Amino acid sequence: MMTLKINGRDHQIDAEPDTPLLYVLRDDLELNAAKYGCGLGQCGACTVMVDGNAVFSCVTPILLLKDKEVTTLEGLGTIEKPSPIQRAFMEEQAAQCGYCIAGMMMRAQALLQRHPNPSDQEIRAELAPHLCRCGTHMRILRAVHRAAEMMTRAETTDHGGTL
Image (cartoon, rainbow, N blue to C red; front, side, top):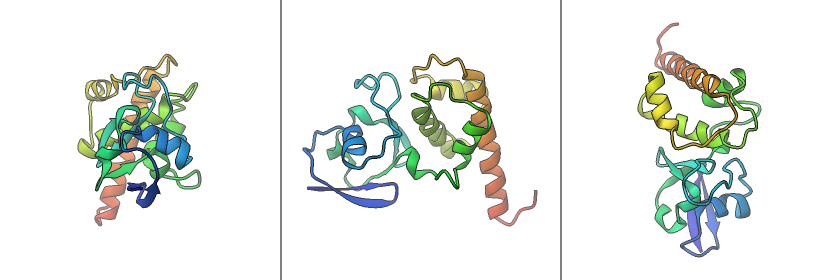
């Protein structure tokens, strides 16, 4: 038995220590935003954040997650109250098939937490590990920029600034 902190809550997990995080998320906790793509950490569909860093959950054994915070797309917001990255991707209609988008949003979220105003080139470099054939790449870029603006505005408002 192992305790994992996922989306701000502790979960008791009964799995072997070498079990990939993706399997625990999907099979045990029914958190299905992270997708199984390649199983080799080469497509990005399974991306989640661990302590604010984007990681491939399909190749991350749960034994490495002791005392760490895992965040999935479900932990960023809800349908009723989406996070800025979720709202921006919806408003820009950045998803086509949707398979890779959850992983891209998580990697974009990690980027925006580190670097609140990235350039197109920085966004492209950050999202490079993700395989996507949808053809919405320009919408994805716009969505990340829109989320950055939303997050900056929210931070300014939260700190007593005016818009």
